[in-house]
Image (cartoon, rainbow over all chains, first blue to last red; front, side, top):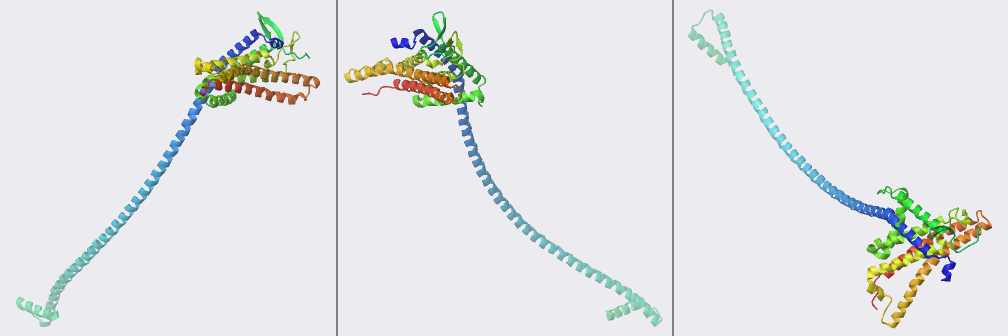
Length: 164
Length: 238
């Protein structure tokens, strides 16, 4: 062991270094490896979770988009249907109103015609009576005498008949 | 400038424990590493910053390497030891390059000397490495399987086993002398160059020593790890 002597190896120094190493091992284990490995593990887990979540979100987004597209097409087809229906209804309504209006107009025209006829007849009657009076007066003036009521009437009527 | 000596210089005695300059540097290294780890993990947050970030990088890389070689279960056991070897050797190697080492004197002796330029320190590390390696082997294999690694009824394998026992001692020697030799040679080279011309010219050698310091720490760490993994693995049936 002469060679060890030459290098100055002493058991007590070896022991001191072993103690050094053990102290350092303890300190580093307690204050460096443990907390750092823990945080590394935690971060790894968090990242994994985050990636999983991101995937989930992406999937959901796609799903939602699909759903939205479906809903839009459904809604637009429904809207188309509603529009068609309302158009049809409107056409029917217009048709109905038109026919109703025509009927009403026809009625009005008819009624107007009737009342006109009535008026005409009334006027005719009026004219006739006034005419008879006029004729009477004229006759009195011409004949110079008053006719009996009976004669008068007969004559007037005869005249009127001739007139009309 | 003092002459080159293999033995570490003894600064004084604490009872019967000789305080050598390398031992002193060992203590300083421990204090520095302890301070760094305190500061780095004082406020551990999920979003890393500053020192935490740096040490996370180192720890993550180290743990990844250990896990890859030894599997998740054993990594938890191997990692702290292997990583401590790495950090201890790396920091002490790099500290040995700081100005003041082997220039500041105390009672005509250099006060500071790179830790691993003393065989005591490297041999102690190698012995710890070997001791732990065999302890783990016994722990994982059981004493019977462990002994079967070395002893066999078949004379050829008995001889192989004997060779392997010799190999185990060689491992200790190679681990300790590799580290010691590299760092000691670096010290000598730096001293020699600096004594020839102290400006600019030593710079490339300093860069070299930075690399050597890292490489030696990594080699020690990897070898220890590989020995641990290999020895605690079940022997294939012959």
